[in-house]
Amino acid sequence: MNLQRNYYEVLGLPPSASTSEIKNKYRELAKKFHPDLTQDKVLGQRIFAQINQAYRVLGDTERRSQYDATLVPERAQPGMPGATSGVQSTVQPQAAASPIAARPTQSQVSPQVEAEVQRLLGEAEMAMMGGKVKETQAICEAILRMQPDNVKTIGILGDVFAQQGDRKRAIDTYRVALQYGSSPMIQSKLARLVDAPAPSATPPPAPKSAPQPAKSGGLLDRLFGRN
Image (cartoon, rainbow, N blue to C red; front, side, top):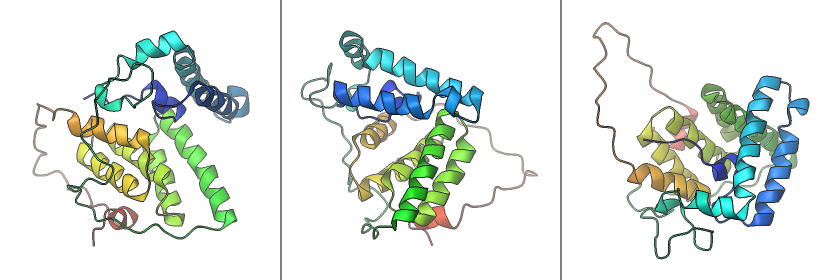
Protein backbone atom coordinates (compact mmCIF):
# COMPACT_ATOMS: atom_id res chain seq x y z
CA MET A 1 0.00 0.00 0.00
CA ASN A 2 1.51 3.37 -1.04
CA LEU A 3 0.85 6.01 1.60
CA GLN A 4 3.51 8.46 0.44
CA ARG A 5 2.41 12.09 0.58
CA ASN A 6 1.64 13.59 -2.80
CA TYR A 7 2.52 17.14 -3.83
CA TYR A 8 -0.87 18.53 -2.80
CA GLU A 9 -0.43 17.06 0.67
CA VAL A 10 3.10 18.48 0.93
CA LEU A 11 1.68 21.96 0.37
CA GLY A 12 -1.36 21.25 2.56
CA LEU A 13 -3.86 21.92 -0.23
CA PRO A 14 -6.71 19.95 -1.81
CA PRO A 15 -6.34 18.81 -5.45
CA SER A 16 -8.94 21.42 -6.44
CA ALA A 17 -6.70 24.32 -5.32
CA SER A 18 -6.41 27.21 -7.76
CA THR A 19 -3.13 28.42 -9.23
CA SER A 20 -3.13 31.49 -7.00
CA GLU A 21 -3.80 29.36 -3.90
CA ILE A 22 -0.85 27.13 -4.77
CA LYS A 23 1.42 30.13 -5.31
CA ASN A 24 0.38 31.80 -2.06
CA LYS A 25 0.74 28.58 -0.06
CA TYR A 26 4.19 27.97 -1.53
CA ARG A 27 5.35 31.43 -0.51
CA GLU A 28 3.99 30.91 2.99
CA LEU A 29 5.68 27.53 3.47
CA ALA A 30 8.95 28.57 1.81
CA LYS A 31 9.24 31.44 4.25
CA LYS A 32 8.22 29.32 7.23
CA PHE A 33 10.55 26.39 6.52
CA HIS A 34 13.53 28.17 4.95
CA PRO A 35 16.73 26.52 6.29
CA ASP A 36 18.09 29.90 7.39
CA LEU A 37 15.03 30.39 9.64
CA THR A 38 14.79 26.94 11.22
CA GLN A 39 16.72 25.67 14.22
CA ASP A 40 17.28 22.24 12.68
CA LYS A 41 19.14 23.14 9.47
CA VAL A 42 19.19 19.58 8.11
CA LEU A 43 15.47 19.07 8.66
CA GLY A 44 14.72 22.53 7.31
CA GLN A 45 16.65 21.79 4.12
CA ARG A 46 14.77 18.50 3.67
CA ILE A 47 11.36 20.10 4.08
CA PHE A 48 12.32 23.09 1.94
CA ALA A 49 13.36 20.73 -0.86
CA GLN A 50 9.99 18.91 -0.68
CA ILE A 51 8.10 22.21 -0.86
CA ASN A 52 10.11 23.39 -3.87
CA GLN A 53 9.68 20.10 -5.70
CA ALA A 54 5.92 20.20 -5.14
CA TYR A 55 5.70 23.77 -6.40
CA ARG A 56 7.83 23.08 -9.48
CA VAL A 57 5.19 20.58 -10.57
CA LEU A 58 1.96 22.14 -9.32
CA GLY A 59 2.98 25.68 -10.19
CA ASP A 60 3.31 24.77 -13.88
CA THR A 61 0.00 24.16 -15.68
CA GLU A 62 1.33 21.51 -18.07
CA ARG A 63 3.31 19.63 -15.43
CA ARG A 64 0.37 19.77 -13.04
CA SER A 65 -1.98 18.32 -15.63
CA GLN A 66 0.41 15.44 -16.28
CA TYR A 67 0.86 14.88 -12.54
CA ASP A 68 -2.88 14.93 -11.85
CA ALA A 69 -3.32 12.18 -14.41
CA THR A 70 -1.13 9.91 -12.28
CA LEU A 71 -3.32 10.28 -9.19
CA VAL A 72 -5.95 7.64 -8.47
CA PRO A 73 -9.48 8.71 -9.53
CA GLU A 74 -10.78 8.91 -5.95
CA ARG A 75 -8.46 11.84 -5.30
CA ALA A 76 -9.57 13.92 -8.27
CA GLN A 77 -11.89 16.80 -7.45
CA PRO A 78 -14.36 18.41 -9.89
CA GLY A 79 -12.81 21.32 -11.73
CA MET A 80 -9.17 20.36 -11.16
CA PRO A 81 -6.84 19.87 -14.15
CA GLY A 82 -6.85 16.22 -15.19
CA ALA A 83 -9.95 15.32 -13.13
CA THR A 84 -11.91 12.33 -14.39
CA SER A 85 -15.47 13.22 -15.32
CA GLY A 86 -18.20 11.45 -13.39
CA VAL A 87 -15.81 9.76 -10.92
CA GLN A 88 -16.82 10.19 -7.31
CA SER A 89 -15.33 8.91 -4.10
CA THR A 90 -17.11 5.92 -2.61
CA VAL A 91 -16.53 7.30 0.89
CA GLN A 92 -18.76 9.98 2.33
CA PRO A 93 -17.56 12.44 5.00
CA GLN A 94 -20.22 11.22 7.44
CA ALA A 95 -20.17 7.57 6.47
CA ALA A 96 -22.96 5.62 8.13
CA ALA A 97 -20.64 2.64 8.50
CA SER A 98 -18.30 4.54 10.80
CA PRO A 99 -18.18 2.93 14.25
CA ILE A 100 -17.68 6.32 15.89
CA ALA A 101 -20.74 8.34 16.83
CA ALA A 102 -20.95 11.96 15.71
CA ARG A 103 -20.04 14.54 18.31
CA PRO A 104 -21.09 18.16 18.69
CA THR A 105 -18.46 20.78 17.93
CA GLN A 106 -16.64 22.05 21.00
CA SER A 107 -16.88 25.67 22.09
CA GLN A 108 -14.33 28.13 20.75
CA VAL A 109 -11.07 28.48 22.64
CA SER A 110 -9.57 31.70 23.93
CA PRO A 111 -7.24 33.75 21.70
CA GLN A 112 -4.28 32.70 23.86
CA VAL A 113 -5.09 29.01 23.46
CA GLU A 114 -5.70 29.46 19.73
CA ALA A 115 -2.27 31.06 19.33
CA GLU A 116 -0.66 28.13 21.15
CA VAL A 117 -2.60 25.65 19.02
CA GLN A 118 -1.38 27.31 15.83
CA ARG A 119 2.20 27.28 17.10
CA LEU A 120 2.03 23.59 17.94
CA LEU A 121 0.36 22.82 14.61
CA GLY A 122 3.36 24.33 12.84
CA GLU A 123 5.66 22.12 14.91
CA ALA A 124 3.53 19.05 14.16
CA GLU A 125 3.60 19.74 10.41
CA MET A 126 7.36 20.23 10.46
CA ALA A 127 7.90 17.05 12.49
CA MET A 128 5.65 15.05 10.16
CA MET A 129 7.38 16.31 7.05
CA GLY A 130 10.68 15.35 8.67
CA GLY A 131 9.47 11.80 9.29
CA LYS A 132 9.37 12.18 13.09
CA VAL A 133 6.07 10.34 13.60
CA LYS A 134 6.36 9.78 17.37
CA GLU A 135 7.12 13.44 17.96
CA THR A 136 4.24 14.39 15.68
CA GLN A 137 1.82 12.18 17.62
CA ALA A 138 2.89 13.69 20.93
CA ILE A 139 2.37 17.23 19.63
CA CYS A 140 -1.06 16.35 18.20
CA GLU A 141 -2.15 14.85 21.50
CA ALA A 142 -1.06 18.05 23.27
CA ILE A 143 -3.16 20.11 20.86
CA LEU A 144 -6.22 17.89 21.27
CA ARG A 145 -6.07 18.33 25.03
CA MET A 146 -6.60 22.04 24.40
CA GLN A 147 -8.94 21.80 21.40
CA PRO A 148 -10.45 18.31 20.97
CA ASP A 149 -12.30 19.16 17.75
CA ASN A 150 -9.35 20.57 15.78
CA VAL A 151 -9.90 18.96 12.37
CA LYS A 152 -6.43 19.62 11.02
CA THR A 153 -4.78 18.09 14.09
CA ILE A 154 -6.94 14.98 13.98
CA GLY A 155 -6.11 14.66 10.29
CA ILE A 156 -2.38 14.82 11.02
CA LEU A 157 -2.87 12.18 13.71
CA GLY A 158 -4.48 10.01 11.01
CA ASP A 159 -1.36 10.58 8.88
CA VAL A 160 0.74 9.30 11.79
CA PHE A 161 -1.23 6.06 12.03
CA ALA A 162 -1.13 5.63 8.25
CA GLN A 163 2.64 6.14 8.26
CA GLN A 164 2.94 3.53 11.01
CA GLY A 165 0.96 1.07 8.89
CA ASP A 166 -2.05 1.03 11.24
CA ARG A 167 -4.64 1.19 8.45
CA LYS A 168 -7.75 0.66 10.61
CA ARG A 169 -6.79 3.28 13.15
CA ALA A 170 -5.92 5.76 10.41
CA ILE A 171 -9.33 5.23 8.78
CA ASP A 172 -11.15 5.69 12.10
CA THR A 173 -9.15 8.84 12.83
CA TYR A 174 -9.87 10.40 9.42
CA ARG A 175 -13.57 9.67 9.95
CA VAL A 176 -13.49 11.40 13.33
CA ALA A 177 -11.91 14.46 11.68
CA LEU A 178 -14.61 14.56 9.00
CA GLN A 179 -17.32 14.42 11.65
CA TYR A 180 -15.98 17.69 13.05
CA GLY A 181 -15.60 19.48 9.73
CA SER A 182 -15.22 19.15 5.96
CA SER A 183 -11.75 18.65 4.47
CA PRO A 184 -11.27 17.53 0.85
CA MET A 185 -7.70 16.51 1.61
CA ILE A 186 -8.67 14.27 4.55
CA GLN A 187 -11.56 12.93 2.47
CA SER A 188 -9.18 11.89 -0.32
CA LYS A 189 -6.81 10.23 2.17
CA LEU A 190 -9.72 8.29 3.66
CA ALA A 191 -10.86 7.19 0.19
CA ARG A 192 -7.37 6.01 -0.67
CA LEU A 193 -7.12 3.90 2.48
CA VAL A 194 -10.61 2.43 2.25
CA ASP A 195 -10.18 1.48 -1.41
CA ALA A 196 -6.62 0.13 -1.01
CA PRO A 197 -6.25 -3.68 -1.03
CA ALA A 198 -5.51 -5.31 2.30
CA PRO A 199 -1.91 -6.48 2.81
CA SER A 200 -1.45 -10.03 1.50
CA ALA A 201 1.21 -11.13 3.96
CA THR A 202 0.26 -11.89 7.56
CA PRO A 203 2.96 -10.96 10.08
CA PRO A 204 4.22 -13.87 12.19
CA PRO A 205 2.81 -14.14 15.73
CA ALA A 206 4.89 -12.68 18.53
CA PRO A 207 6.79 -15.14 20.74
CA LYS A 208 4.86 -16.23 23.81
CA SER A 209 7.58 -14.87 26.04
CA ALA A 210 7.37 -11.41 24.52
CA PRO A 211 5.60 -8.81 26.71
CA GLN A 212 2.27 -7.57 25.41
CA PRO A 213 2.14 -3.86 24.48
CA ALA A 214 0.22 -1.67 26.86
CA LYS A 215 -3.18 -0.51 25.66
CA SER A 216 -3.44 3.10 24.60
CA GLY A 217 -5.56 5.06 27.02
CA GLY A 218 -6.52 8.54 28.05
CA LEU A 219 -6.84 11.12 25.28
CA LEU A 220 -6.97 8.76 22.29
CA ASP A 221 -9.54 6.51 23.98
CA ARG A 222 -11.76 9.53 24.55
CA LEU A 223 -11.23 10.64 20.93
CA PHE A 224 -12.49 7.30 19.65
CA GLY A 225 -15.32 7.11 22.17
CA ARG A 226 -13.85 4.20 24.13
CA ASN A 227 -14.38 3.89 27.87
